[in-house]
Length: 583
Image 1 (cartoon, one colour):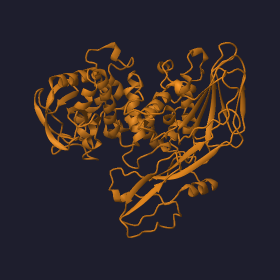
Image 2: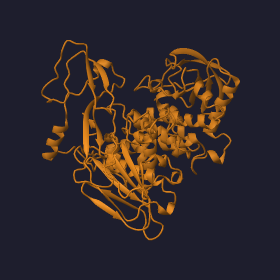
Image 3: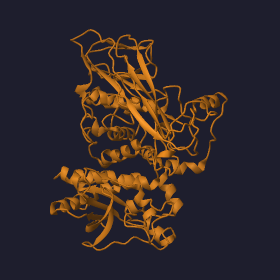
């Protein structure tokens, strides 16, 4: 159960003093992760001592609205029995006032939290040998030296042979032909009804993913020869400890929709035990690639290969456990872009949108028009930089995936972001989730990330900030991810001041205003501005005496930028500390 506080703000501070209006809605969200619908329980914000009232009705309907700018939403939850839930914030505050803190200093938890790969290797006695592919590092030692698979090892027919798999798009068993084995670790299976062109494209895409021709263009870094190697070097091995298989299986098939996907239920079918002699064919390292997707992007074989990288990331993730959707999909989107030295996924992907500023102001998790893939992918791309969070810490963040008590949002982000600029700890100590101030780690990171996105709109590198906290990775600094022309812009020759500009935003959403080429400019925040919106002002260098500056303004504060004409961007983010709460 997750209680999310969505804040819609009006009258956001831009330049001159203004009145700041705010409306807030308390919204109950429901997550049923592989559980019967009847077990989903809405949050009752009454006392913990008072169970929620139970009536004879079979369902409860919750609806809410937020005025003319918010659509009315409705959510129906079925229930069968009485339940007790409560708002835990008073308890947190009471414990904090009494000085109660979680138990700290557990060295045994450092590896599972900070190095999931090493921790799992120790757990299953996996010892990688020289020359073993990173995706299957330790597989041979598992089969040879442990009883993990109890004598079972997945076998396959020769190329040209067939096997029956469940087509999970239609839920029916179908015969699949083994079209090719790429680089000795990728099985390319084709379902019924495929064309010669489709089969050619399928094999070619997997050859690009594995870089069978050893092309320098397909080497993502100096230590990885292919996108496949990079995937497993950063994220970890394939889930072979659950499948007793040393190959990735790609099932190209008709789906009735344009997509590719992974089912964690395939390789975790016997959890916590691995596959055995009675396991079906789908109990393997499998991802599904729809012919409709291949056809939709006809001729773009490298793109299909990046989709393979995305789905391979999901295979690795699922072998470590579960996490919330935004980080699961965001991390795979991060991998298909920056981690394999490709461009980030464009915002048009997964459908069009009407308004760049509405998208900018959308909720950081739900997002607008389904763009949370790209948002969290770009957020991780930003965090991976040295001088920000770093590659190792960012990989650990996305790989924190237990098999129970699925984490969500700030519970993960805040912990790892609290180590920005620091080494991983020698002992594990949990952090306390700050639900009162706006200075929690994720708030700072979200605000700085938005400034970094804006900094790419400054054309000349010499006019941008030098601090990496306010920059995207080098390959994106001259290629703005955002359409910079869509920010509300106020030209210096058109008006002397900006007064009471406004934009609504949800939790984690942003509003950006551009002041184009003013001289000797003062930006101020009103005394009564909502303190749950944080503001940083980015002033580009003027190319003469004044370097780029980033200044944070709190309510009642102002800053004056001197010098010649320079671009100024006002960046604001809704960092309401109650914007997300774990019950």
